[in-house]
Each structure stands twice: as C-alpha cells, then as structure tokens.
Image (tube, rainbow, N blue to C red; front, side):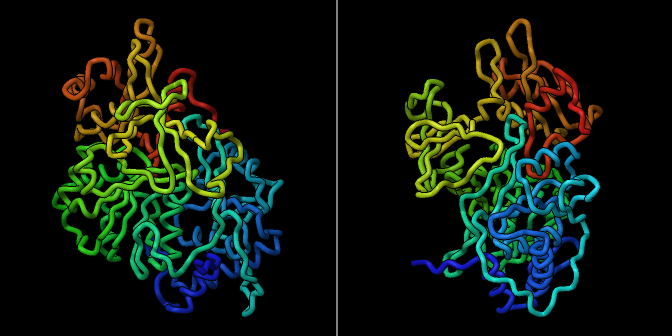
Length: 489
C-alpha cells in the first residue's frame, strides 16, 4: 500500500534534504526550500491564532509571487483549504466569493474592504515565529478550492475531493522531475496554474512564476533557469510565436522536455508551428475540468495522427449524447458526458449544481465527438453555440480561423440578434484597425469557413479579450453589447 504523507510533511522533507535549493522564484526574489518552510511556519502560527484549523477555508487574494506560495503552504500546514481568487477583482466580486467560501481569514485584502471579516493585507508579515512552532502534522481534507464562473459568469467554488496527501515514492505527476524547473506564466488563481505550480513544488521542482504573462519574458525565464517544463495556453503560444523569429530563437531552450498546453482550444495551424519549432515529442495537451472527473492527454506525435484531438480519457470514460440524452454514433457530434472511475467524489460545488444523468454521468457543457479509436475531439461549450438560420456555429472554430491572421492578437466570437437569421456572427477582434480592416478579415474568414459561419460584423478593441489563463467570458461580452456593461461597484 502506498505510503501517503501530508503535503506539509513532503515539503519539510524536501527542505531537510536540500535546504538551499530554490523552491519558488518571481522576478528577482527567490525563496529556498528552507526559507519557504520557515516563512510558511510563521504565517501558519498567525493563522492558527486567528482561528484557522482543519477543514476551514482561507481565501487568498494575492498576485503571482512568492507570498502566494507562502500563504498556500501555511494553510496546508493547518489542515485548512486554500481558496485562491484574483487579486484584481472588484469589491462586489470579492464580497460574493467570500460569502460563498465563508473563510476564517482572507489573505491579501485590505481590512477596510471587508470590515466584517478577518483580513491580512497584501505584504503582511507575521510576528517572527519561535524556534518551535508546535505545528502538528495534519492533512487538509480538500487541498484546493478554486473559483469558476464558467459560461454563465456566476461565481462558484469547486472544492477538491482530494485531501492534501502525496506518495513521495510514486512517479511524479505531470512529467515533473525532482530538481527540475517549471516556468509558470499563468495566473495562480486559475485551476491549471494552481495544479501545475503546486505539484511541481511538491515533487521538488523549482517553480519560476512570472508576475504576469509576457511573451519574451517567458522565454527568458525558461532560458535563465533551465526550465524542463513550461505551462502555456494557446493565447500565450500565439503571442510567443508572433515574436520576431530572431528574438524567439535567440533563447536557449535545450533543457526543455515538456510543453503543456490546455485551458482553451489550440488552432491546428498554431500547434503545427510549435511542433515544427520544438518537436512533436515535447508537446503535450491536456483536457479536463477543474472538477477533475477525468482527463485526456495527447502527445504531439499522437496528435499528428489524430489532428484536432485532445486524446483518450484516463481515469474515466466519455459518452457523446444528443439533446435528448441518447448516445450518438461514433464520429457524430453531441454533448460530452463524463463518468469517473473514482470511488469517492472528485469535487463538490459551492454555489452551483452539477449537470448529471443517471449512471454517474456529468457534463461540463462541452460539445464534441469520439473517433473509432476512442480519441475525443472538442467543439464549443453548448451555451456558447450560435444558431444561425438553423445551422450551428461554434465560436472556437471561427476564432481559430480569424486567429490565423498575423494582425489578430486575439478574438472572441458571439451571436447577436438578427431579424432574418435569428442570430448573426459577431467578431470582437483585438487588433490595430490601421493594420487590418473588417473587409480584409471578412475575406480572410471566407477562405477558411463556410459562408454561414463567417462573421457578418466586426468590432475592434484594444484591451485583451482573454485573461492570462486563456479564458474568455463570451456570455459577458454578449451581455455588454446587448444591455451595457455591468457596474463594478
């Protein structure tokens, strides 16, 4: 039977084995394993004094940085659950999420913003911890509780069904290596960055986190620290690819073994470019919800044989059904339903209800199909689908086509009301209108898409449409254009 130990015990063992090894780096700040252990001890003692204990939640509203890791580890050391949120949320959203989580302490928020809560502001330093902290070895019953707005935009918590336990003798998860290095340019309040950063740390890798994504800074960090693993989303991949070739190829990436990409669809042309640049054996794609029912993984080599697929399921099974819940024939598209092989629940929602069917099936709202070899191909979320004159248009397909234009930094496609066809395809494009016109983009789309899928209207914006995790809320974009922006207060 596997010898499981707590996350805290694993990190203490790593610190004892090599105390001076770098644990986490952000910019010019690096904490060694010993420093991370000591600083998280001090914060844990303070959090315990404030009432944090086994099974309680602690909301963490800190930006990417070493303090985020100190806070998360301190929470684990008390057997509590870290509940990360964005440090840049407006007050109303902070209040809504804190109401859902009901944390004992909120870290990273000014006490004046939440006067009814116990808050430790960003930059808080606890009193110096005594030599003996009297922190007993305990286990968090849920090791994380990230948030998700999903397609609806309504906040919810997804509390992990897994406790804070690890088998130190088991093969490292996600292809990490002890004494390796992960470069993480994504925001640490999103589930993917949480999972990759935390498991890299727990498996003894040096975690190099960027304050926020920057294409060249990501390559520079990989070269400087000899990263063997990097986490990206396709939006990041495109921005890196769009760097001048002389800049992109000037960084030494010889140590790189694994490029993970996930969180949003990757256009085939972009994946081809990365495969040609770095080699198919380095490229790995993963699909799976924050809920963790199952996952699929596909290597670049497999993908060349099953273009567009996200891989075959592991830890569960997939079923494709029509709107009435009937299983569709192999190769036909429908709603993707998932069933886990776990004996215990993978998650629980706070603030939402799961979409379920008899037999243990659950849906995240994705559309897709499965080929004869069992490989899954994804479409869009069913809520994002646009019905145009009786035909289905999936925004991701249109966005991928528009994204092939070199002047398009990012784009989002939504449906707006149309008297003739019910809906029209509207493209919101992050691009300089002096470099590309709506007429040019319309012609570009017409070369790649059937007529009914082509955008009939275009809108140019300057601000990023996707966040650093590659997420876009199409429902919110549509709401803003039909009703007007929602107030932030």
